[in-house]
Structure formats: structure tokens, C-alpha cells
Length: 575
Image (cartoon, rainbow, N blue to C red; front, side):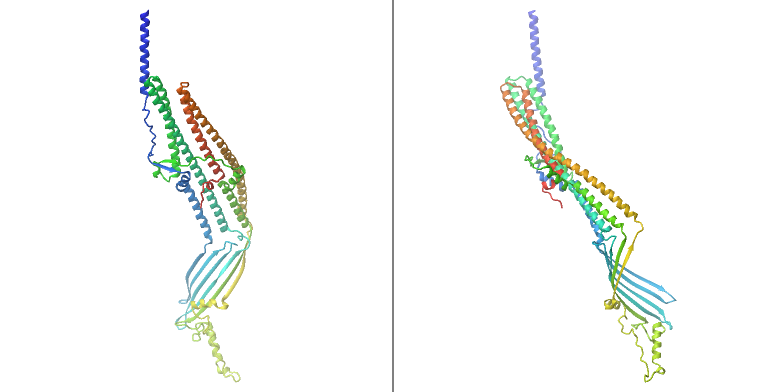
């Protein structure tokens, strides 16, 4: 019996040694790296030795200069600027010129031909809706006649005219016409596109702010977890030394290595989040995928703002109502509806236009001739024209001595009234005659257009009234939404500030608890498990504190976005 018990005891002892050896063997297998081995924190596509220190202000300006969304919004503004210039082009002066030649043939070789040049410039006047048209016209008409002796004779009539006409609407189109309507609407649309550009700019700045503070937190989180990992490595060194001295069983190594592995997992997870937020910031500030900064690590230089903000709900709401691009756009749409109503209301009126004109007219003529300049009435060519024939017959009768009366032996010959006359000549003579005192002419008249029914304008006016009421309703809806967002944003700032203070206290207490737990562990009154818990709790408390600071700064950015004071707060002006 004693032998059996002895054998059993020896067997159990051997079994215990075998189990201990097996545990020690497993523990040695579980070691994945030496305690002094550095952890691999390399990230895809990023060189560890290349860094780019960047401030929040620089990140915002890089985004505004390089971001493709901002560039698209900027191009929208430029397009509407071009459309406004196009609408204003209606008031550019228009110069036109027409030259023509016409020939009419009559009996055989007899013919008329006319050559004319008409030039004019038209200028619309913005104020009053009138138009003025200066003009200069000149024409030359030739008459080719075959004489009794078969000769082809030519007479010329030249006419020039210089002046202007002016048209002024008196009723319809006086206060507003289609051209002024289009220009005013285009200005409002340009202001809307500017508001859209400001909204996209504010949104993009907000995204950069969020990404920047996310990067600040990700770097802090990674640092805290790496520090916590280093604590495990220090614990592993101590345990190894204690195991060698026989103060700790080999099983203690597995406990420390397990915690070490768990903390490595946390570091790698922090590394993944860091890569994601850094890439998100790079996407916002870099122009394309070939930018050299993709291979560099971004290091934020700004720290979270911890100062309080003093802004009342009334002040925030006033800023939001005055600055929110959505409200600005709706107000501009409201003004567009008012312009449309003014125009179509004006189109329902009858049209009464005043038409006036002033001109200088000059004439010049040449008689039928074969060569050289000959007076219009050629007494030697009575067969050519009735005027020449009548003047010739009159002088024959007056010079006949048989018709002498009393002591009068003869009646003087009637002189040719066109010899040395100022109207005798060619085209240049007609132009010189423009400035003769008797060349001035004036005209005035009224054009009345009274439609029996004007269904188009009346229908458009009704449509505009409906759209204006819709815009008024949209403004009320948007104002209510803005008011809600402002209240939420202010509350978020206030709550974040309170959380920041509480998180700071929690971190301070976690540090005290960890130090106390270390003191207890060093005096063998606590376990390694509780010590690890306190270390992890401190890491979480530190992350919670920096996260509360990040949330506070994000809340400030959101308040700026909600009140549309982002541009002023970041000293950004938009041309």
C-alpha cells in the first residue's frame, strides 16, 4: 500500500513537472517579438522620413486654391458673369451700312440707274427705354435718254441726308422693357451664383476643419496607444527578469504578452484610422492624385482652441439671417419675381411711342449732257426736256421785235435760273448743301398700339404672382430651419465645453488611480490584471479628453457654418 502511494506521488510529481514544462514551452512559443523590438507603423504610400507640417489656415487656403469642387463653383460664377455681359450687350451701339445699285430700262436705250449708300448707328437708352439712331444717306440717280439726233444724254440727281431719329415710349416699355428686365434678372442670378459659391466655400472650409481636427485626434490616439504599448513592453522586461530570478512563475509571461498583443491590436487600429483621416484631408487640399504631398505625413501644427465663446442666440440668429447663402438665394429669387411682375404688369398697358427726327437734306443736279458740266436747263438742247423747250420758246418770243411795246424795242432774255445755281453739281455738292440754312427739317409723330386683349401678358402676370407666393413660403420654411440649426449649434458648443471640463477631470483622476494602483502592485497588494485595467483606463481617459477638445473645436466650426461667419472668422475674402 505504501509502495502504491509512493508511486502515485512520484507519478503526480512527474506529471506536475511535465505540465509545468509544457506551460513554459507554450509560453516561450507565444513570444512574437523581443520586448525591445520597435513596432512597425509604416503606412501605405507614405514615407516615414517625409513630413509636411501644416496649419489649419494653410490647409484651408490650399483647399480653396486646389479643390476641384471649389473650382467648379468658381466657374459657375464666371458663366453667369458672361451671361450678364451678354444681356448688357443689348445696349452696345450697332453700326450698319447698306449699299445698293438698281437699274431700270425703258424704251430701248432709255434707262434709270440708282446707286445709294445708307449708314446708321442705333443706340438703346437704358433710362426711359428710348432709342436714338443717327444716320447718313446719300444716293445718285442717273437718267439716260436718247436725243432726236440719236445721242445718248445723261442727267444726274444727287441727294444726301444727315440727321437722327429718336423714339421714346410714353406708356408701355417706359419704366421697364425686355432688355432692362433681362439685365436686372441676370444681375440677381449672378448674385445667386455668388451665394452658391460662398455656400460651397463655407461647406468646404467646414470639411477641412473637421478633417484637420480628426487628424489631430488620430495622431494623439496613436501616440497614447503606442505609449500604452510601451508600458506593456516595460512590464514584459520586468516579468522576464522576475522569472529568471524565480520571483514569478512562467505563467506570468503569458499574461503580459496577452496584454501586449491586445495593445498592439489597438495601435494597428489607430494606425488605420490615422491613414483614413489623413487621406481625407489630403483629398480636400491636394489638386490631383499626382501631387507629391501624398507620400508625406501631415503633421498639424495647430492645437485645439480651449477658450470660451460668448455669443447669444439673438446675435447668432442675426448673423445667420443676414449671411446664410440659402436665405440670400431665396431673397434674390423673390426680387426676380418682383422684376418679372413689374415687367409683365407693364406689358398689359397700351403702347404709345413718341417718334421725332431732325435731318439736314442736300440736293444737287446735272442736266442731260454728252460731256462736261451743262446747266440743268440747256437752251441748246430743247428737245431733251420740257423745261429746256419752254425756256427756249419764252426767250424767242421775248426777243421778237414784232412784240415791242412803246419805246421798248425788245424784252430781255430770261436767264437760265440754274446757271451758277448752288444745287447744280454732283454728290459732293449735295453734301455741301447739307449745311445750307434752308436744309434743316424736323418731324414728330406718335405711334399707338392698343391690343384688344393681352392674354399672354395677363397669364404671365398670374404665373409670376403664384411663384412669388411660393418663394415667400420657402423663405419662411428656410428661416425656421435656420433658427433650429442655430439653436442646436449653440447648444452643441455649450455642451462640448462642459464635456471638455469633465473629460479633463476624468483624465486627472485616472492618472491618480493608476499611480495608486502601481503603489499597491509594488507592495503586492494588487494584481497585474488590475494594473493593466488602470493603464487602459488612463489611455481611454486621455483619448476622451482630447476627443472632447476636438469636438469642441468642431462645434465651433459648425456654429460658424450655421451662422455663415466662416469666411470672416478665418479672414477670407471673396472677389
